[in-house]
Length: 251
Image (tube, rainbow, N blue to C red; front, side, top):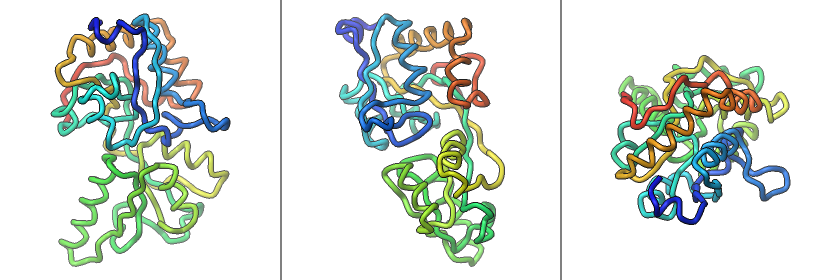
């Protein structure tokens, strides 16, 4: 562990706490909970440290890690080439993209033919790139573009689908599945999960030794079964990985 990281015994963690079940605010309005929180807290314990989560805007976290505002970013970051240019990342989970719409799909939404529809996504997520590419394909085919409503919070994007402000939305698969569960039958999942990719913990670009220490701690949790216990507790075990990797190759 780098001395400057370990000296105070605390890891300051930036996290967008609107992303249930990964990281979100509990019913008391204060406590940050979720499978990301439980798992990384155990990783920190393996390193002899305490993880202290702080609510942050999703789009600002990687820059905040780079500037020293946070020592780690833990916020369901899909590892992609763009992010690997800004930070060192350690894989810990695998998730794809999942769509959802109102129960019964009254608008007949087809994710593969959403031209002219209004779709909700969280700002700065990989789903923005996904839906933007779909909209551009619509225009190239002479169809109406997709109206893309971007929200700072995933909870607001989900609420937009429930209220009818958007006819559908897309998010990371465990997040959308949890959202559907929490809306009490108002929403349903739409289509299959696609483009599975690893989530990664974020540390500064030059902090490769720190990253390896995190990977080793996570490997120990996988080996002793604690990793699986955490995922099963949150019903997200389908995304379990066999071993963490520092800066894995991604397309």
